[in-house]
Length: 181
Image (cartoon, rainbow, N blue to C red; front, side, top):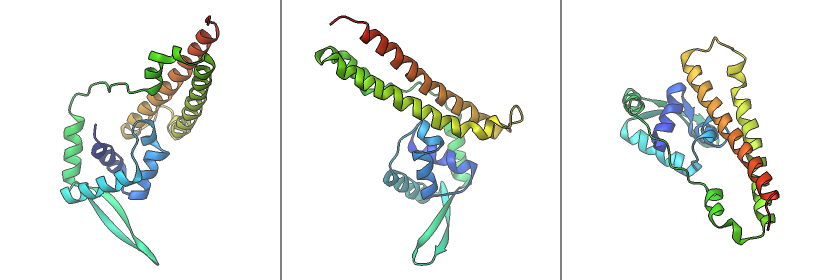
């Protein structure tokens, strides 16, 4: 998956400003699955516009630069549909904590306990944030339009991902605390 496809996916749902796209990556749905800096997002929006995959409407703002509201074009929609039709493979796990596990025995176990507890708390908070994203979908029950059903399902996956981390951290903490030096 490329940053390009994630941005196109946001824009296929509704036109957004660059700021709104960046906010989705930082706080919204995108924060569940993809990290991108504001600089990367604006650079990608510029490329997408040059390639004809998005267009924008400039909204004048007194005393400031015009606000650009980006929309996906027919070409961008075709690009996104082509990408969506491709099979996907699981992403490789790139996890610092996993690599630390290879050599964790080299430091006092109190350090490992502190880091695993910190990560448990981080994943707990992130899971709670993601659950808030799902509130609008849960309130509709079984009446979700397909457009929202897909979003709801992937948010449910993100909630489970965070919960799996919390569960693993609990398991790891119990094992380390019960281990002998």
